[in-house]
Image (cartoon, rainbow, N blue to C red):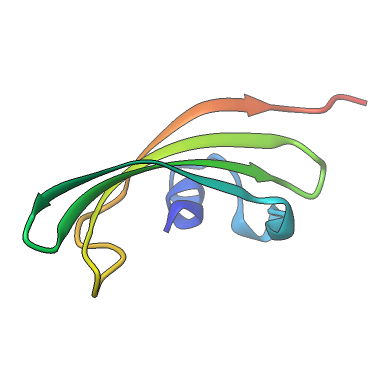
Length: 83
């Protein structure tokens, strides 16, 4: 879902991402109710040109659904390699 968010926001095209390099860290989970959690993730994506994109997302989830709400995504860093 985060990749689609980046594409829709015009940050990077999914086809340009180097998925095996992606790093995902669950930063926080808060129980909001019976089987309802708010989760904060930190992603670092790399594209085929070794540029990086750091994203923080906030999403509501449950044990049955990884996404109950829409993704709130925040681009916190975009680094380009200039050669």
